[in-house]
Image 1 (cartoon, rainbow, N blue to C red):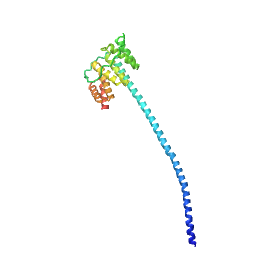
Image 2: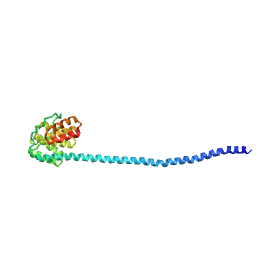
Image 3: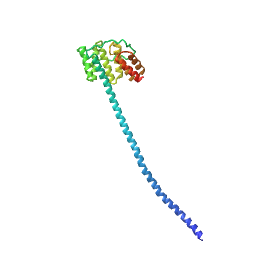
Image 4: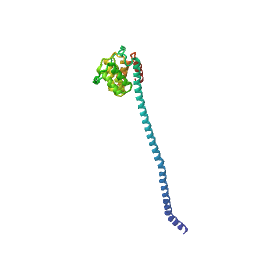
Length: 245
């Protein structure tokens, strides 16, 4: 009788225990969900921190790019200033620039037609026009200087300062990033005034223009031509060849 009673008690208690387990499992499920919620916040916070870090890095890189662009413009301006200073030391605005350089030979530059010149009614002397243009260049008024140099070439195409005018027009165009115009003016100097003292400088700058335009084969040929001479530009050409080829 006792065994029968014990069996019935166990049979009745089993469902109760099962219900207890189910009831106890429910809080664990709730606790589990709570744990996931607790861990979700740090994960989201970490992603947000990474996004902020990337934004800061992009901002920093943008600042570096702007700074480098500024430094490049400063270097271009410094180079132009150095050329002008050298020009003043050698000859000044009234000196002659027709010394031959027999060590350099003409090269095929494959340049488009001569750049258009401005037709300006002007009664100033040759020296006055060139001096005015050079003064504007020295003041960094490039637009006005360009017009004055073009006016000089229009009135005095074979004048004492014609080769210099072509050279400075090329330098201004190069400074402004107009490589096609720079190429035209440097090539005009080389082809029209082959005995001018600025031919080596014009060839060197022409080589750099071709390099900037992506024509490295022609740039190298021109630089090698300049490097074989005895001018000051030969040293620059040799350095350019070492650094880039």
